[in-house]
Image (cartoon, rainbow, N blue to C red; front, side, top):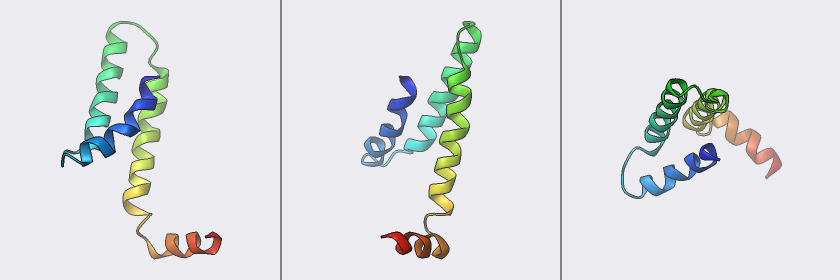
Length: 76
């Protein structure tokens, strides 16, 4: 449930000119540390962190590539 809220932090903080993706990563790492110290379930956070980082890297580097635009325009 907590992981579903994190993608919505980016647009809200982007309007305030704050680094939303970095804050979401810090929140996830903080949750991993908190859950590790309290001996609770941290597997969803360990799966969510690399997924979030890889999606953000995909967005930063591949979305603006000409090959991606050509692939996108084949379908839309």
